Image (cartoon, rainbow, N blue to C red):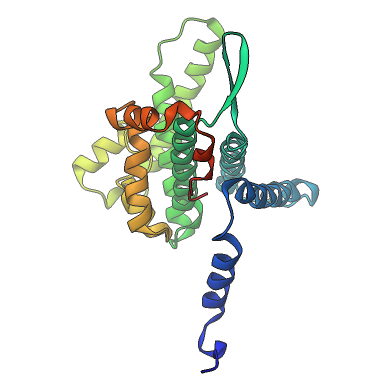
Length: 252
């Protein structure tokens, strides 16, 4: 029976090609491919400056978010080439799996936040509201830090004014007024930078595979908080000295 490719959509064909291109590769081969994509991403961002393309203020925050993703991703990829530690003054290269897993969580959260702020299928006005809430929560948290230097106190005083300005902007938004009273209270306390979206819900709306990333996120969280599972895995994997561990398939 002939293989009739006409029955497949363009997306189906692209998925098959991606599977054939990547499924047989080891992690170091994956890293080379992803480095190329990271390079392309930085070129696209830089083109905004080289081509002098003007954007609205709320969109300018996409640039540092992308660079944050680039920084974390590049460091993560570099770790697949090995991490040097010293034992009795002798350099030894290990595979630092715990740090790889933690960085994968950071990269995932970065991507999900970027999607939530800039890519979700909502109106521009709602995106602006989300960014205002995101900025408000971050700045409010910093204004509550205990500081001692004159310079830091001056900066904090300026940011307190900015926090109040953003608070008024949020309070007058139709999206804020739609929230329940207790939700409004939590938001203004600066505790909900992504409103009331859990990471699991963001995974779902972003289009990532929920069955895969839901479990992976929980697994990575155990490393971030030094739970027993993370220590058990470090011990089971021979503390990174077992070189074959680098061939484990990660969802880069």
